[in-house]
Every structure is written in structure tokens, then in C-alpha cells.
Amino acid sequence: MRQRQASQGARRAREFEAFVAGAAGRLLHAATLLTAESPHDNPRARRLLTHALGHTYACWDRLRGEDPYDRARQCLATRFARSAWHQYGAFGRGRPHPGSALSGLTPQERLILVLRLYEGVAEEQTAALLGLPVERVHTICDRATATLLHPPKKPAPSVVGAKVAPS
Image (cartoon, rainbow, N blue to C red; front, side, top):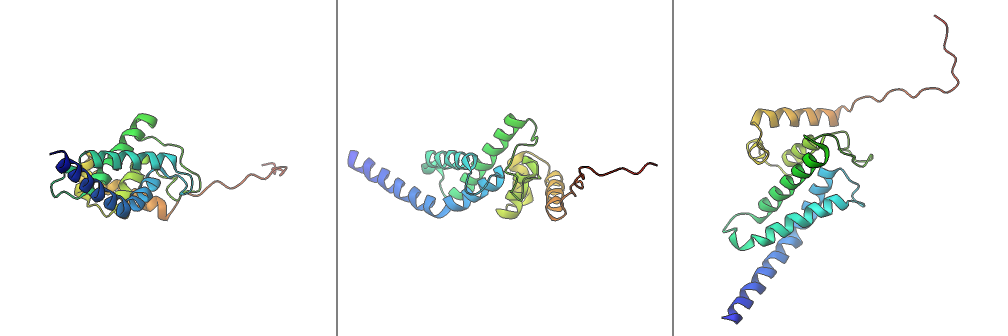
């Protein structure tokens, strides 16, 4: 009996290690996009990934044909949404890395954009995962995409010592 349990445990560990070897890089990249951290300095993204992989391992035997990548991605997204909500309130603005392409987006915009465009999750699935109407997901994704393609103009730098002409 113990030998059988040990054999099943070893098989489970090998299967999970193979999954992590194939999926961890992409999941880490998605987490880094979500947190808008630098790819070389991303402690929040690594914590999100660690939690998602730990949760996936914990329910590995109960997946029963379910895609483990989908389960890990779902855990990653919900954990990010929950932490952003608690940290910044109602998906407020966090403090992303200033060099990140997604730093100008709110956490909710980043989450929807990453799920829709980077991960290729359908609008309906994204809406169900986040508990939002499909139309809202569509609108937020469009707004985030427009913000990335046409970032707001920064104010012109002020000139020190310039004289203002009297009117």
C-alpha cells in the first residue's frame, strides 16, 4: 500500500515538474505584465507565480482532464485582481515600473489586456473570470489598447529663466 502511494506521489511530482518546465516562463511573463514590473526585477510577479503554481499543485489530482495551464492562469489573474483591489482600492493605480509599456494603465486595464491579447482568453471567459459584463470587458480592452497605441501627451517641459511677455 505504501509503495503504491509512493509511486503515485512520484508520478504526480514528475507530471507537475513537466508542466512547470513548460508553463512557468509564460506564466511569469504574464505575471510581470500584470504587475508592470521590470522583467529583471519582478518580486510581485514571482510571488503571484509561486502562489498560482502552489495552488495548481494542491489541486493537481482533482483536475480530471482540466487544463492545468488554465487553472494556473485563472489563479494568477484572480490573485492579482484581489491584491490590486486590497492594495489600491477598486483597481486604483499602483506604482508600476516607469519603463514598462503597460505602466500607464490601471491594474484592471492591464489584467483585461493581458488576458485578452497576451493570453488569448475570449471576452466571455474573461468576463466570467472577473465577474464583469462582456460589454464592460470589451470597453475596457478597447480603452486600454487605445491608450497603448496613442499614449496621452506629456506636458511640455517648462523653461527655467524664460521671460514671460506682458500681455
